[in-house]
Image (tube, rainbow, N blue to C red; front, side, top):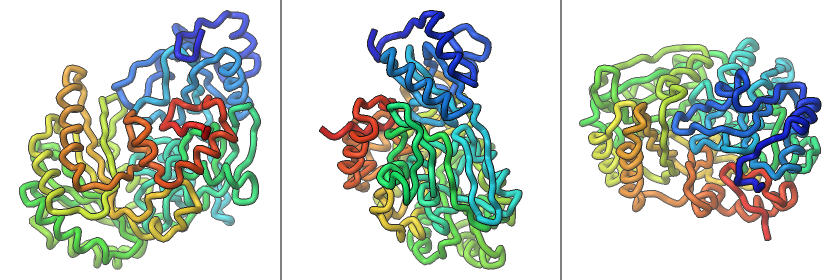
Length: 457
């Protein structure tokens, strides 16, 4: 039996493993098995031999030990939002962290501890009660774990930097089953790698974040007719470099609920609403606004504003890249492609970077691509498996047409399975250092069902 095969566990060994778990051990046919193996991306219908629904770091260590003993492929599920389906496997063991939901907030110290099964909506609810927040993603049902480990792009990043920049400590179960702590003062090399290096070095069972005074933001969405999208994007290209760190925008090529193609601008101003309105007002002058929903709102409402574009269970495919400058030729490619998009559920996203993200020391974390102006994503979404080929084909063709206008860098959390060259592009010059760190903490590449960093030779 190899790690690529299907494991048929003996009842006696399962009983031993269950005796070491506070959580439940599931096999095919057990109540809850099918629900536990479901992940966000409906493209993947995989059946692990075992699902260890962990309740503690000790449970995680026991599951890792079992996997090592039986040469099992490991997948790790936090929020289950992995685009390429890395949260679940066929025939191996899924280490399911979803039951680990504790959040503790030290309001006076502006620090929160959270376990890896927590979703951003749950985390934001806990911190919002104290008027505090940290940069999260843009979808509230994304898990905190994967987003943090890959970097953490979100609405607050231009003011308060990436999620990983706000990670101040972590508890990690390593490939040899040890539970270690990582921070600037303890296992500092591991701490560096966790902030952007993904799940390559161990399973994080506790995250500690620096929080910031954010309660309400001034934000929302406005939209223009897509035929005027080039004019608006050209105006944005000139305008956005002048805006303050408090403002973060994401531009969307999307289809409205009534079937019209549009260019939308989602925005979040984390500061005084009156000041926010002064910076938002020029956006209304860039073209005829056909829809507007902008005003003060609680930060958790901002975080869930576009949840409807990422409904769990739909089919998803993605191509992504950083962009240094949005050239006219690239704008033409984007608009032409979206006019021919096969699914009205699909969108093209252009996330504004810069601000605090670009000012952070690029050697302080494993997230390297801090100078990008934008993060581009072709976010294909559909529901009918019979439409897989046409939707994936549309995404790949758009990607090919954009190649002359993009650098090599990509956000690791927005990679599908694209090969080692693209993984290296995600980490840039940090890759060699990450490979050395991988050799130290996971020399056998036990944690490889991810955007994998191979151990240095």
